[in-house]
Image (cartoon, rainbow over all chains, first blue to last red; front, side):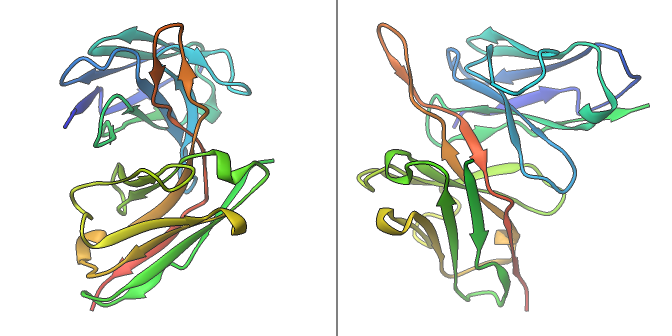
Length: 107
Length: 127
């Protein structure tokens, strides 16, 4: 099973600040790494697919990078509406797995 | 507009059974693989099961293998999860989620993420 670890677990950020969340896979997964945003009491929403591919309708301040085992989600100029938990997810092999999540709070 | 609407959750005793349904609309259901993903209260996301568009390929997490059965009815645009021998640790919100279209480069194709999710249905296993 591919284990995904995320850091940090929690981040408190002021609006307009830049946020960086990392996801590390226990073995190489190429670019089969995806990012989701989940706001309280809502279902997850796909933000970035295949490490760096943008999703229609997702603000351009969200971007992703990485390959192999190390990946990054960047939120440029954080807005209040970005308060949420962010999860990485790998589709390289079964069982499909998710990272534990990174909660982003707005100061 | 793509819509996924889960139903069938509720309170069930340990050892009991429940059948979840997911009604799909706004896309050609028979062309997409579908999935169940769960989230225990206050916890992260856990993949449960996947089924291919024609039901030819079915996969389960080890935690539910032998107890849960995924199925679909393409004529009814519906996805199902039959859950038997339920345990307290199965308590969670269960989401149905659609596979995004397959991405292929010039040399390979890559398994997709989940591009649409339902609102979830809560399953509580408790005596």
